[in-house]
Amino acid sequence: MAGTPDKRSMTDIAPTVSAVLGLPCPADATGSVIQEMADDLSGSERVAIVAPDALGDFAWQQWKGAMPYLQSLHAERSIILHSIMPSITPVNFACMVTGAELDVHGVNAKTEPFRCETLFDVVHGAGGRSAGIGLDGYTGSDLLGRHADICGNAGKGSDADVEAKIIEIVNNAAPLFLIAQLGRVDDVFHKHGPSSAAVVPMLKETDARLERLIGHLKPLGYGIIILSDHGQHDLVDATQGQKKGGHGTDSPEDRRVPCTWA
Image 1: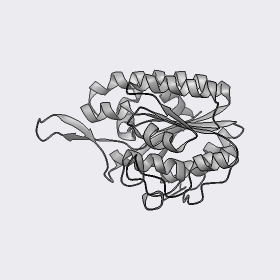
Image 2: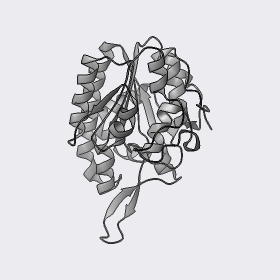
Image 3: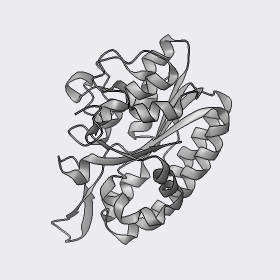
């Protein structure tokens, strides 16, 4: 599955980041370099992954008109990646930084340790610094921040706080590699379901946030990758009869995620 244009995998992210930075790939990565991404980002001094949690292709195809900035990026560079199973957050963020499947990286939950080498290890071994950024109690902070050189715990607020923490860290430390989770996107999808119009205000805020972040990161030498960890499907709450969002299955709604870069 890894590396083929019609079935690119989340395992391909770590090898691609390594190629852009000119560093060795994490030792147990099974993915392949996404060559068009690596070519476009070649020459970047640093790499940042910004991940709107759960913004899968199912929701993207319905609501991309509400995200004109992100749509403009996809008009130039756009691929589909497939989340590894199970299609849940800790498993797939762990995959992004290891290039490995669950049975190798071993992270079922955000509190668990990695069982293999990560991009954080590779960057640190080369004398660089890395950062993992997210809200308190979320994977971006509790898993990625815990293993990176810099833990960007943005508190218990909103994705606006994650945005502020990213800017603070790059201004003060300029890590060679950073990965940030915009976790409230997933929360809103869970609450309303990805096909509900109630998610649109959040998506508009996320679009403006991505535009600001890319505008800040690019002049600092960052190549930026924007993707999600998984998607979501609509489901009906059995007790209340209300539509909500869920994920974790092998369905296309849960596994197909759009990816672009700048």
